[in-house]
Image (cartoon, rainbow, N blue to C red; front, top):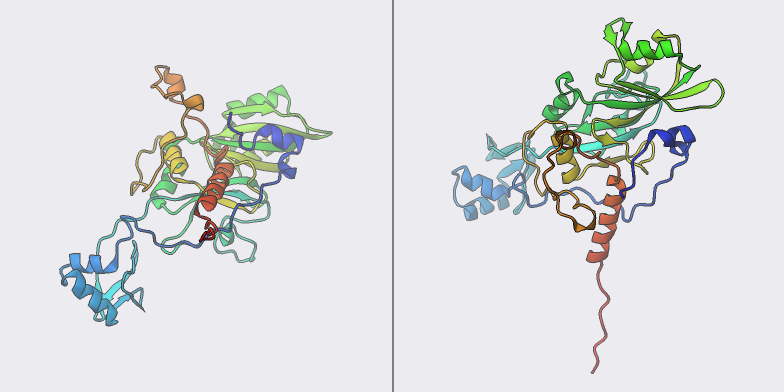
Length: 346
């Protein structure tokens, strides 16, 4: 049984605030342009553009007559989507496929804004994300200043727009702490719809989660991403929200062990699963090196389900992503660790 991600019960019990993450196996390595279809060698691209043979292009590069992003190129250099190439001072336009979509899960703490520019110079979520050599990270929706929890980022504008589009109706799940207990009439109003300044809004589900004293916890789901929607809905029935945590976006859970202010990148399998589970199909470039999904327990072979309900409900993503990635990283590090030399016996 896989270890679940952050659940509603963890928040109510206080385990969410006291969770600890195991130390990473190794320090994160710097990103390099590895041999992939979307990072071809420069001399090969120049030769395919009709400027000469590959040997001629290598000599041209060695002579310092080729610039990449206004810097002298070197023999064996790889280029990627978005690089600017000049040969003898003249721009050369080449077609390179854009990189496959990347997705980051970020555990947003309260007090950070989801914006690159802020006149008040408040902390922004973008300062903690890994740097991209080309393009930029785009947030999938927003969380207001005082809301914490799961926030997704991607380098694909197409994917970001699809994940946010109301047509796909991706469900968002929140843990909400409010002042005072909801009456049955108030619950019915929130489920049937309350009128806000920008139109009617309603919860897809609303469940009690207990609490202490005047503070009561509730688990709610919505399928929209309007500004401060959850807070305004509770305020519409006379209850102020004192804490708001997003624990799921679509099929993506807030990974257990991911501390506030930390982020993790989804691997190829999780990225593909998130795209497919949302019914989005293929986006831009096909992800390279995508591994197969984790096999069923006990080596059982997966068979096509004849139950339409089961087929329409894929498993949640992110439940064990962080621990699995750290386990794979540790395994890879142990395999690549240099073995000590044996003494020769004369």
